[in-house]
Image (cartoon, rainbow over all chains, first blue to last red; front, side):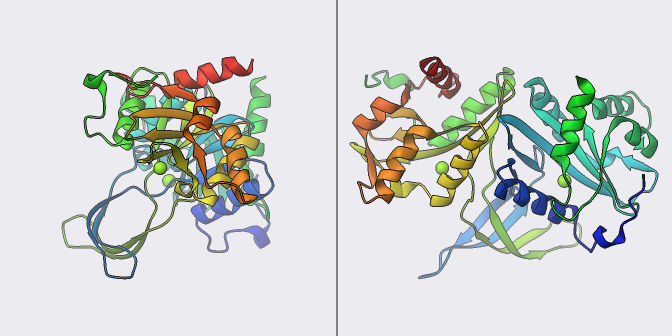
Amino acid sequence: RKKTNPSFSNRGKTLEDELNDTNEYYLSNNIAVIHKKPVPIQVVNVKYPARSAAVITEAYFRSPSTTDYNGVWNGKYIDFEAKETKNRTSFPLQNIHEHQVEHMRKVSEQNGITFLLVKFTVLDRYFVVPYEYFEKKWERMIEGGRKSITLSEIEEMSIEIEARYNPRLDYLSALKKLQNNFN
Amino acid sequence: RKKTNPSFSNRGKTLEDELNDTNEYYLSNNIAVIHKKPVPIQVVNVKYPARSAAVITEAYFRSPSTTDYNGVWNGKYIDFEAKETKNRTSFPLQNIHEHQVEHMRKVSEQNGITFLLVKFTVLDRYFVVPYEYFEKKWERMIEGGRKSITLSEIEEMSIEIEARYNPRLDYLSALKKLQNNFN
Ligand SMILES: [Mg+2]
Ligand SMILES: [Mg+2]
């Protein structure tokens, strides 16, 4: 199961780059319209120099209240959070903010398709983890259990994506597989 | 048709405030999960003072490549752009960026629900203008026709929203009416 084709492996791209490439592929091939949301920034001071663009001179990063990516695929709402970990054996839940889990719960209740896209950077492996499975492990932590999801649990409850040339990370095909599993 | 109840009228709120209130109502009543996207900002310089939050010291506003709001309603993808005009007789199309129209076209092709929410601030009137109708007027402009949509055209091709106390601007009910019109 481990990806073995080095010609398509990391290449120093971040997960965000890989997903932007994938989403561009989906967009230009009329497969889906999915974008990364801008990072939320609180603007405190702006200067307006004569004859040039406004310059923000003081601003702060705010913590995101939703997920990284959302959009539409065949009329269906898609919403996900992308996370990388250097860990080799488990995915630490401290990577996820509570308000992001709350957001995904609400999306799931509205029958949106929501999931985590997890990359194990050292292993060079990628997984689509449906929110409905992830939630059980999140609740395990809340109830005092372990603060991570083991790799073998992830292997069991997710669809693995093989990184390719184009589209780089075909997570929509992974979602199709998941939907077939459900039916 | 003109709204006459002054107790629920403008109150100095911007359209963005009104929509944020509406979306909070939808969220807390489990009706839909719809958020305003953060304003896209290009960060150029960040300082990291000891023991305090990172400060952005140079950044610029970027023009948005998509629309203001998106989210999910009963599994369906919702995507819209909100625009105010002080004009009393027409809505100027220069208010809309070409790449936003392109985005709405792609959303429409993916069977997402996409529209403009237009406020005539002086008249205190609000309209849900479906993209599929708007597109015809946009194309009229491209082909050399008028650079605006007249108020009477908007009255014909839109669903008007009456501002209320809570939810302030019930655009999802307007969408239901539109869907009934289609069926
Ligand atoms: Mg992320
Ligand atoms: Mg706007």
